[in-house]
Image (tube, rainbow, N blue to C red; front, side, top):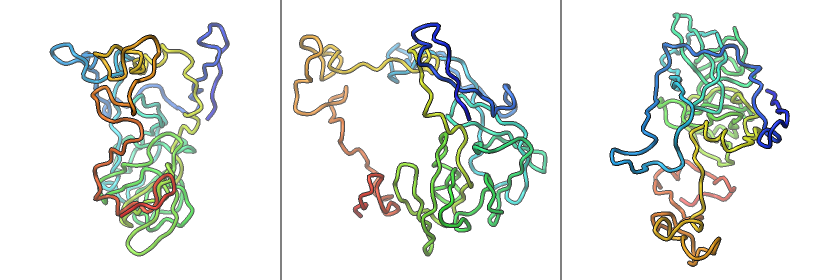
Length: 282
């Protein structure tokens, strides 16, 4: 994938970059697999108060129904019909047509082309974008759309340009190195797709101007110290003063920045190393 740089006709355009969309083959989605999530409530409730901060407005968009399970199409080959843009995710998506003539959207591989074939099978060939049980994947290969819980569908490694790596196959579990650096145990009956997610240059895009963020439904974020005391614990005093307390707080008075918020400890047994490479305490 390549990025395009705009001519500096305005200050906002001077550093702005964007997608060339050269991989895409169509600009219109398959209507039967879309529905609208648009609600013109601007993230306010019935009394007009903001219920979700930092979101408002934005361009209207349709949600594409993506298949993250695949398992009800075991051993049924499919052909790639189109590579498309999805406004609700950073990666591209592919419209596939199975041999039984059912069409579904799936996450696109970075090298996927129209008329390529894919299949979901327990012992599928080791070809990019094929999906198979994780114990059949050799050590060192890259994977994405990883299942963490058996038969629950792909829940990890789905964003643009991401991939996990198989580190070892031991007993009932496979050691997988996640994109964050965390090493996690995944049950061998879980499925994963071979390869790397599409749109690998997504993190290189320069937004360029504030208005482009507003198109994405993103409102500005303001420091608490710039607010009034009634709006934030850090607020008040003159100009851009220090927060005036020993540790930072959230707008609701809870400790912030560096405070551990993970409450679900029963899943710690599946994590061998944290993303900072420290061993997980059991």
